Image (cartoon, rainbow, N blue to C red):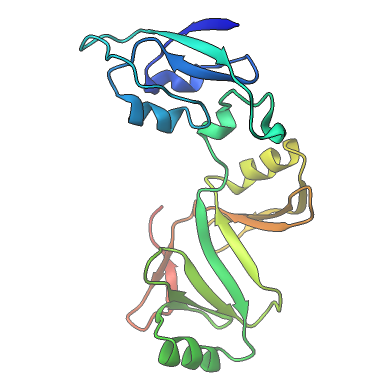
Length: 215
């Protein structure tokens, strides 16, 4: 069985839907942006190389061809959703570790392991991880290890988690850089989600937090 749908350029790809389960997209004519660029927008579908469309052509025809799935767990999941185009978790903001003494923690992670100080308060210090903008935060208040994820809005994230079948364990609250919410996925994994709506921290020459930079 073959269905056809009109091609839409990436700027309005979010409006595109493919509603037939277990089908792969096979272009009958390749759009101007090229197979590789298009594949990044249509991940999970089989893209076949075909002769290019005339330069400047915007619309083309696509064939949605039923193909067997090698993974029964993804049967019927051929469409791109708005959520796939707008992931909730943007990056890891920090990993938080407990230490009983901040100076001892600095001696171990900085002096012996080579990390450098980003900022410090009376209860926590943040250390730079050289190949990422995520931070390693040493703190003296909570013995549980914690991974914090960045989101655009903690308040919106709380609603989206609940709608998806997760649970909001701690409703959104204010933090130094913005808002934070503690949630759980359906398997009980705790996720700490935070935004930087108030701006990232501002420090003095010694790394002490003195305020926030404009968001």
